[in-house]
Image (cartoon, rainbow over all chains, first blue to last red; front, top):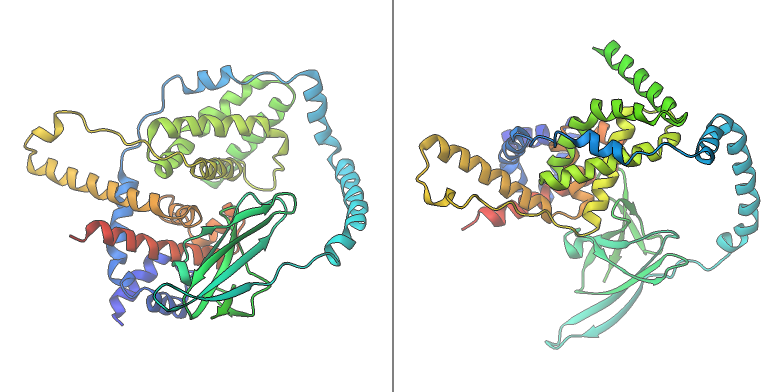
Length: 211
Length: 189
């Protein structure tokens, strides 16, 4: 491994990355070290681009849409000063609702385990159809990302809007794959139903499936 | 300098209090103080001036409507910045692509001078990087943009996004790997 390239990659990634983490990254993408300086220069060129000017009437146009709040709105906003009371009331209400709902979530149906169906493709090769299922009440989107799709999030289909259940069947070749779910494009969630788990090198866990 | 920043923060909170009391015209002071920095950040992310201006307008409208939710635990500028970040996430999630800005008609016919060649080369490099950034999944694009366009440290990104440091590092490193892959495809013959 080229020490100079490793140093340039470390500068690009940041001081929060340990030497071991950088080694791990270079194992996954050996070309990244050689490209680090080039990438850094490209970003610098974007940062140096002149930002266009805002319209001179930007503030005037914005303020035209800002209306004085009505008496009711101001009354509502003045409750800000009674926040402690409102917060306490909300906590009490949440506790009561939580007690009522708890049985459903504590002893209710568990997430569906990962299901796998084996098949033979048209070329006579084994293929496994893996059904990934994730549940996150309130989620707008859930995707699955893993070794089998270069960690590009693949959207799952919503099958139960009320309970936030998403699912999709993905054909995979025999092998071992690390993966994770991505909720609303921003939160990584491990699949608790996976048979195995592995550290991802950054202090998180990925689910693992062996086919 | 930090004393100036503290005074700025105090002034912003005072303006918000006045807005909540119904003195909405005060909000113009906040707009004037932050419009350029918010617009610059949004423009770097979306790459199109008109879209960036619309998003910047939305950011301030949302900040005004949610003034009562500002708890004062974080800095006001950080809170405003988080609104901008969420608005940009919505923009990408909506699937609206960045509009291409057409070249002026005569540009392609001229023989550029050497200095213009250099500028054109840099502009093409920047465009190439933007195209590669557009191809990244939003979860990686955001991390890479915060790290390298806004020049935030990984630690600072955790404060703005609310993510753990390990998650941020994972997104930045994977985002870079994918970016290198897309750039490699653009640059190879």
